[in-house]
Image (cartoon, rainbow, N blue to C red; front, side, top):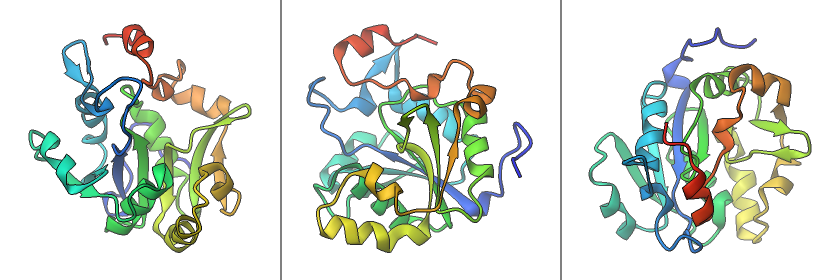
Length: 207
């Protein structure tokens, strides 16, 4: 059963995690700290997530990265437990640190998360191992909800250096949120706009 639009889920069941472990090599700096219209990408993300979640983890590469985020006191910064394992390692770290049974995970380069879409994903999570948006043949595993019960499956893959999230999802009971369901919450699909290149940054709406 889907949540009523605009109604937050039971706060004890969910936390959020923002994955900020990527190097941003094509941009030359940390993508979470990029500015759009005078505000950082991370500030834009937090504006949405803080309305929904009691706890937000920021997953970084190592403890030295935490100094970049001291101006965000509402965040709990955690370092990758198994460094160098890519986004799947970041998801694992978030799940290990989570006090809640489910974690909404998103990448740090997605400046326009849609609140209603996040709530819709959360409403579909109970009883599933993951809830993932899917647009045609494309899935969005870094704007998705994961159960803590998947931790051991992830660790097994990490230890074997099998790091592809798409392959990992094939092992899970996944509820895919289809394109028509997504558009009912986020008609412009703005949640999935991400910044990988200088051109992406130039084209980012200053909303």
